[in-house]
Image 1 (cartoon, rainbow over the protein chains, first blue to last red):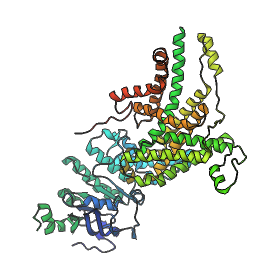
Image 2: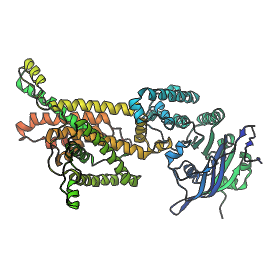
Image 3: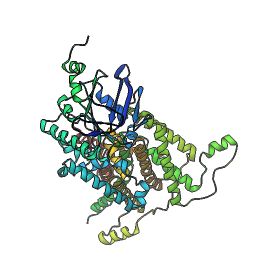
Length: 273
Length: 329
């Protein structure tokens, strides 16, 4: 068992994890008569890689959408940085420092890779419309600074050679990487990844795993990710929430979760009676 | 050079410049459609409203004078001042920004995620409502618009072509001014969308709403922005057409001239709107000159643009520059 003190804990591989960054308290989400999430609570610690797993239709994506503000839960509270979050639009959540990727990739297909990643910097750009009309110079300085940060991320994710390519022409695996780059460009406090490895081949999965670990290591970014590929998740994450039919059936280190009978049943498909 | 050829050249030139006007109207449609997927039926009425507001402000008319007089038994119509054209244009821009904000606040916000046909219907309602408001605000009579644009025969071109070919081309100064202003406007829009933060956000929203939200872009802000820009484009179009043929109800029908341009150029392409406008403008004038008048009894401009657009539609449904529609099976 991990010693989850409020100040933080130390992972199995010796990394120091901080206090609670985000806490979900008794979240319930319904669509009409269907309950997608049923009374779920868990927290995400600073510097942690936290996974949410579960079979298809378990409500993982819904949970991610609650965190990023795309869905508004009927019941429950979302706490971020020690304060209860008021109901927010997704763009307001993004401006608070929560960036995300999408399961089906939501990139700006008509724009170049560079332009796509630059949109990730929008929340950091201060020059307003009048600055840009009157103080062309100031806006230019800001553009240059942002450009430098974006180039660092491009180097980091090894996509230098495609930076001018329109995103629509890229293969699937690279699109996923560009989407990650755009989310990173926002320098988020919390990075949400919705099935970052879905549809990838083994080599691409290994690359993506390495990038996720490196992002966490190098930038200290807290990461919450969704996957249904158990193997990958167990290697990556510090703690895992397991969902099934909208309910939380397990929460703990990969080893704890793996030993949990409910989790084994859910994955092996034991008849519910 | 034979006379016929010279006539044809003159007609072509005039057609191209008429095409610039069509392109201006089409541009307003494309901007809103690209950013929000809404076909804004009210674009033509917006041009009418903008032109009426400009004339009203410039002449110092009291807005809603008829209503005010009826309710309070007063008899006021004018403030008794005349504003310089530049100031009046700036104030009209402010009014159009206010209009954009109101449309978004009162109508579009409540229709987010509805079917496109519902949004289209909403803009039809908006068009007729705005027309009524414009009449109520500024009166329904035909107004003369004069912001100091040059008008009439361009003597220099007339003389130069006369010396060259022995036949002077008739080119209207207003058309030349319109062409220059349209070029400046388009250049401004391109610079805005490519090199500013808001421009990048605008392109992002036009491309993918969900992704735009996830990088912190407020869709509402962008929609107000794009309606304000479309309002500005409508004002420019309103000034040009108003200066040419007076500010009156028929001004709102220029929207119908933009339809074939859109069919030709595609609904999502700014270059398409411009090239489409030029092709339609030139095509209908040349057709009238070469075939319409000699063989069909004239007045073919009313329908030829649509025939041309239909032919294009059959072979390139996505328009000249529109994105190719590929449906995966």
